[in-house]
Image: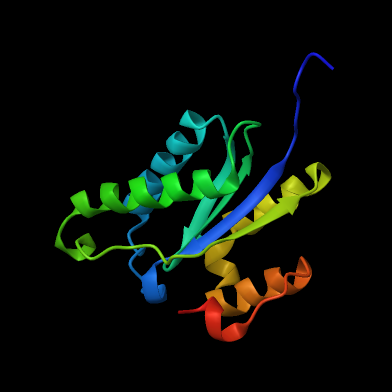
Length: 151
């Protein structure tokens, strides 16, 4: 086949270090989501929806065929953590957690994930990030050891 084609939707999520609620300002969050989307575009990973809550981020994107998930997340976290520190003293100690979750999404279910990301505030009135993340791990049959997930 002379042409390389792919269509891989991925839902990425990661939290602030120690799940500290530093993402409370809607204006900064909107700028952060745009910044993350710009990084995705630079890496040829089309951002579909980006959002989050006070202590974590969700990104739905179409993975570029030459980009690994690990490289994408590394760039997203490294560059955004440096970028957000310019917003003042409240963000000088801003860091992302070391790990992340990345889950494949069927192209017929992207609307569900988009709505899920858009409704984070409502969703987190009932669930913590830890509960949400465990649910993803169970849904996608990811084996994990609880003691290593949060530290």
